[in-house]
Length: 84
Image (tube, rainbow, N blue to C red):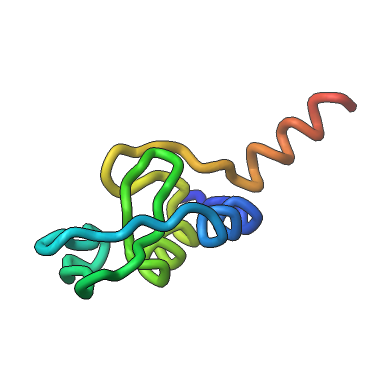
């Protein structure tokens, strides 16, 4: 699997947070969010524990729910090589 670019992971972690509802759970670890927890919101609008999605994106650049593609360092290298 190809990990997400570290800069992209950082943007997700520093980006939008969403208050969770009772009974909501993180699909990475399958644990319920703590009451009033602020979960990390991906660009595709799915929410996760911050630690969980960070670990996930360091192994796969896809959202674990909908397979939304996060940028990878491989994609950036291809763009940079295209101008050579």
